[in-house]
Length: 69
Image (cartoon, rainbow, N blue to C red; front, side, top):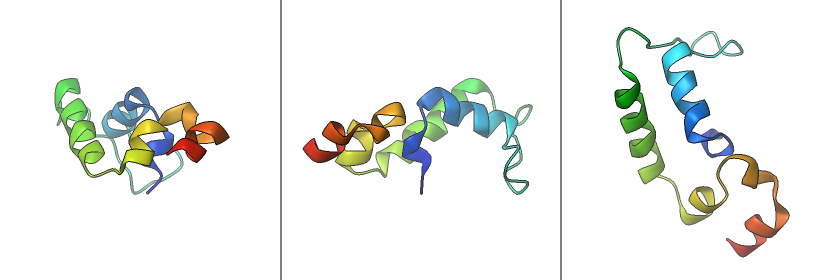
């Protein structure tokens, strides 16, 4: 739900290394290669709306970006 708040690189890192804040989100390093993690991020983003795509990452805090989209 909040994936769009993170950059592509952050999402890839979480896929590969897991999340220290969420024990249920284990890492897939050794199972997936980095390019496969990036393909997963691309698929995830294909499900996003225009606002999430336009204001991804640090831009999600930019009121102007949010207002335009």
